[in-house]
Length: 186
Image (cartoon, rainbow, N blue to C red; front, top):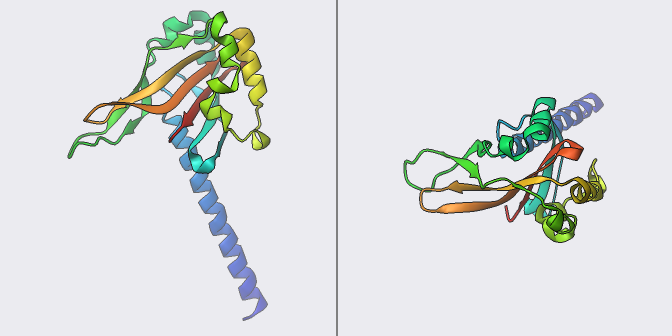
């Protein structure tokens, strides 16, 4: 085989690998963005990380200024009206429409539980977050929650048979201007 044909094949193969990588990254972005309610406007997919074949991990988004200011100003009053995911889930029933995920009531961390929220036990998804490859430090998240507090909720949905808890939590840390989807048992 001629050298130019081999080079051409290598370029085509490299381009296909790059395309597959971009498709995978886009899929990850839309998957996690779908868990964030549309009222919580995020501007940047900061980072996501997973270990153990995706069984647990986290995705971190930056809050847009309007959402950030609403949370600072109104806190739980703003968040209590935010209870639906962008994403729709498959319904187990035959010929049933997709169902939209919902969230439990939002909770603000109290001073008494902030030490819990700064421990490994609180972060089921962040615990297996690949901190070595992350652009944000887990310790920084813990420190901010302990010092300034945060808001959190759990995702749930109805699959046509019963209500399920998805194994995902949405955590907002206003002092860092981030929204974090953490998941486990996915």
